[in-house]
Picture 1: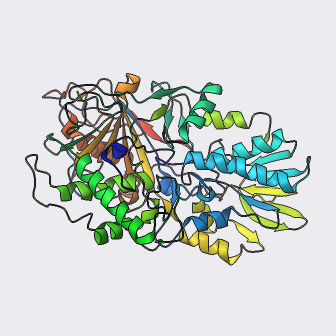
Picture 2 (picture 1 turned 135 degrees about the horizontal axis):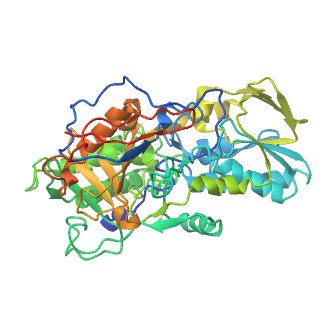
Picture 3 (picture 1 turned 30 degrees about the vertical axis):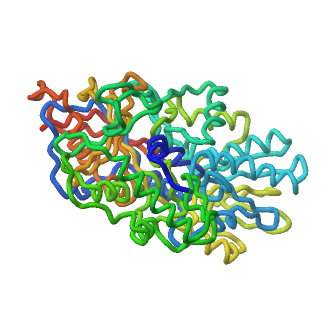
Length: 543
């Protein structure tokens, strides 16, 4: 089936997408912000008068406890690889997490669902009262632990980090108007209502990203400018000229998907919907290859009145939107992974702390924090764990929610070694790199009410932003990067990252004063942080 322009507009960077969650266990600290890294290819110039009051940023690319942000279907891999990893070994060692989810894989929804699924699987082969160790206190592990405990099992959770949540990482700071999520922050799609409802029952605040009405906030090219019933996407060129992005992108995406389905069959999973789906057919082609072979990227290179060609727009889809959504370059990502849920539009923003929801699931359970698993020995008599400290634990069954990135690192020894099919699946699947940079301002320097901003400027380092002002009333912007751009962002020190992001915002800053106010110059104040503290500070770059 094709993908309509409307479907593209109403997609979301769900669980994903900006980063998902699970457990972590190699013996390494979480990274502090790096310094002395390469600067952007073009020395960024921050518009005069622009100042950020503070910032918070992720660094999943450098996090040894996760090995990246979330999994994806790489070229040559299929949903079969995920299902292989979901299988139990000797009915003693079980697996859960976003990478092994049978539905909505690669997202917070898939991780949560896998927790319920693995609890059901254990309940069919185990007896009440048996001891079950869950490795990882992310949402997959916490969900499994709670479901097992409620069924009468003796549950112990082992977590390498000193905090709960895994790749769900909530930062609460009095300088910020609401809790900041450095992992997943927006929820959308068919699986979202269940999680949004669970958050409501747990007392975790959320807010709907507000619909935009008439005026500057509507997406250019959508028609009369009246509200379409969804939050909107706005694209601007380097000089601030609005330009339509959706028509060319939706057409190219529909062409590529239709071609893949006609080539590989209607059940090829080409419209994966961002759920990590796909079948065993057509697995060899990357998204970029399918765009080329289908002719989806053979569009006009002639700029229109705004100075942008359709070729520029399709390139933006492949080079920026796809990597930000999946954490992988279009040449690395299997087309079977790509759906129409590409941007955080018409989504629900978590403002009350997603990490508190995960923590609540573990209330009353034994959680061994700061406990790194070094070795897992399994057999028909039970499972033994060796911790990095030399301590040993034993159980009747074990649930591993080790992230795919950790499995790829080989940081945990399995005895006996994982079967060849498991090792092959681990190698075939990809682990994506996605980063977020939150910027807080004392006042809004922009007039548009659009929720998602696209920057069509090849010299900009940050080219996708989420505007939280319409939904929250607070002047907060979030930069989204992924793939090569995400890794480049993670390699920058705090000063460089904030300066580059502020310079990238120039096309939207129509309310910036002609000259900086006193004290609104200089670099961000770096705030050295201990392990597990994200990069943050009072950011005041000037021109």
